[in-house]
Image (cartoon, rainbow, N blue to C red; front, top):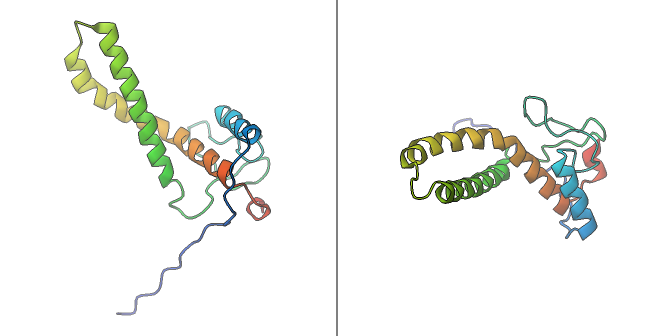
Length: 146
C-alpha cells in the first residue's frame, strides 16, 4: 500500500442490549414522538424551527445521533415507507373522488413533483421516528448523557 493511513472506524457510542419495550414504555415513546420531543426524557425539542434535527436534547443532554455519521440511514427507509404510503393513499383518494373524470395529466406530472417536495420536508420527521424507535428498542445509557 502506498502510504495510505488507516481510517479510524467510529463505533456506536453505546452497545446497549436491545429490549422489548413494555406497552407502557412504548406508549410513552409514541406520545413523545407525536409531540416531537426527546425520546429519552420527553422534555427537549427534537427539531429546530427550520425543521432540522437538533444535535442534543437541551434538557437531558442526550446526543441524538447515537453513532457514526451514518446513523440516520434508517431514517431514509422510514422516509420512503411514509412517503410511499402517503402517495398510495393520496392516489387512491384522488381516483375515488374524481372518478370517472380522473385528472390523469395532473397525476402523471404533478404527483412526482409534489412527492419529491413532500419527502424532502418529511425527512426530519422520519429522523425523529427512527431515533424514537431506536431508543424504544435500545434504551439510553448513562454514558450517552455525558
